[in-house]
Image (cartoon, rainbow, N blue to C red):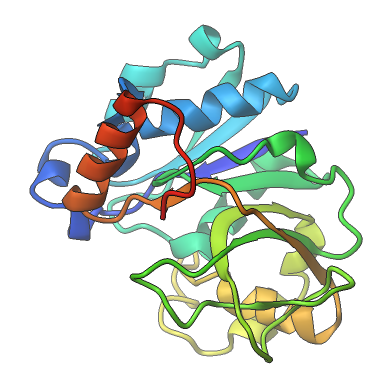
Length: 240
């Protein structure tokens, strides 16, 4: 099973730290944020990881190489100076990811979630890991049904963790779903993943699970500092 790590963002909320360093390469607990993901993916038997890049892209191969230190084969999907968003980033990397289901994870989160729990063959087009709503995102994103289906409508909502398993079929008819959204007509196209997920939810083609453990969206310097202190202090429980 292959994996994609989203690492192309500009890190605007993390400035000035990201003026010279891409956000996934910032350190927490003695290692870059992205290294935590690479180690956990290798631990469950993933052998090939694709990292999408844009901002300060050259720093990723300079830091991570081709993945030998992690027991992985890393390839890079460079998107140019302007990131292609989550949907466009997946679409751009499709030839590197292949035709089978793949894991995708945001490079700017930290979690103790055990990737071994992810299904290798999701029932639908996507399987999402959801977490309790953090203070900075109280409305949440999606509703998790008792039967494991994920819906766009309904309460209470949980927050998408940035971890999921996807089938390439999620992008079937992507152009019709995205419509005339800004960036969709560019080459390569730039668009968000959320509209495709919501369209799949209307087909009952998205499943999910709730992760009750530690998870942090490392979106600001303050959250990075808090995470670093917590990791240095010992096992992390329930971070948001």
